[in-house]
Length: 199
Image (cartoon, rainbow, N blue to C red; front, side, top):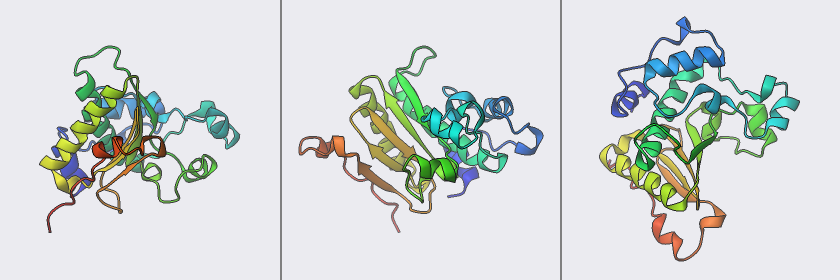
């Protein structure tokens, strides 16, 4: 599936031309508004989870602003994050969902121990933290339902007690994993793999 088809599948009208926006947090926000991202802001997407590491690497104010070439991937990923947020509460207001990681440049990704082929370095994955465990399960269920409807999105789903990694369209394709804190015999029942697309 192409990125354009992913936008359509996730309810966006298309991919706006990034060249008409300034490559800043403000420019990214304007672009995300046109894309139709409802629940997550550019500042949330750009704020480094490890502020000190980002600052040590020279990222001003701990902001990891992706180059405009990565904005289309980030937009699709945030539309996917919106699916998770909507499952918890479809209305504006205190959501109990925090976006912890979105795009990570390679130097920062290495500094925080990220995988060399992480979804984050391509802006194709986000980490979400939930205030309550049952909120994480609602969001997980929404991702699984989306996969069942549109398996060609190539969704990735990392499952924790109150955290999820969600991504799409990566070279590694559809995959699921559980974080160590979640690997107990009881909880393993809830981390069944996403079914791969039929051949």
